[in-house]
Length: 355
Ligand SMILES: [Zn+2]
Image (cartoon, rainbow, N blue to C red; front, side):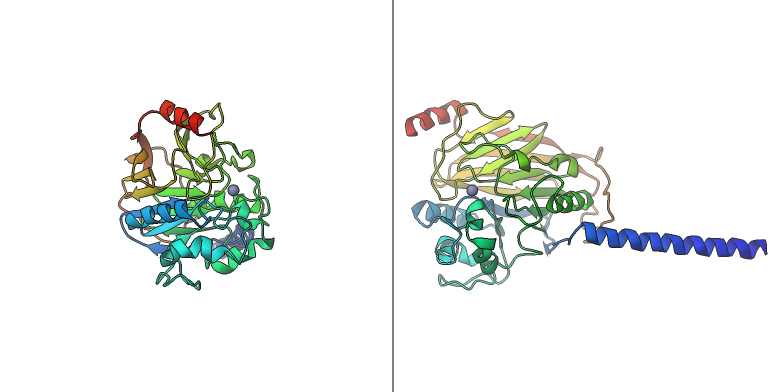
């Protein structure tokens, strides 16, 4: 009888645990609206480009597009403002497809052939939201998940595209549904590099300045770096070893800098249009800003050098399993930057002459 009682209690316990797990699972699927996750490639290394505030048809955009294509990137991500002036359906193909159709799938515009699979991962900017519901953008692109914020993995990098506009239905505060999604999936990620990108910059020394509502605890949540646009400059800001990039020189007019840079600002440039080239492997990731004449303005590398200190995932990782078995448990622990084009002071001199 004792034995039988024990068995019954054990079974009850098992049922209780199963119900608890089911409850947590249901709660999880409610709390994290959806993973939006898409795995695009398992390659060991990857090269991609970052363009921002680019969607203004004309020579600067054409020059930047030519530069980006010369790198032969696997794909392009954008830091928003893809379609000036008002995100209209009547301008979207002229502002985007004309220059980048070969990266877009499905491409339904008039400028030629699209890609055979999507290689263009934009984020929404305020100008894309100026048309109600950002409908032309959402109609034009086919993106993972809800298309406004989503994630995808390419080789050693997991990307998190964020909608930083205040019209985002799932919010832009650090406790919003969107931020909760980001925190959960960043923490759960086993990717070597976790890049978060959006339009409004958490920190910027440009004339538009920092967007305090986007100053989420990205680093604590497990991100590697944050990339943004909105200010039409290039800037690299490093706060407590965590890099923030502002990259908004993709084609619309260039902006001046404020007289006092934000704390942590390490490189500022607005001398010409350009884009970022990023090369990543399982052991390092290098960010470059290159202007349309091919001059490398800034280089910043993060290396994987230590297995200590990485917080374990807070949620079980269901996909993809053991993607980085060889190097899982590593953290990026050192960074190195080079300033390839003169000193910051020289840039200021040029800026003062310009404005
Ligand atoms: Zn903007």
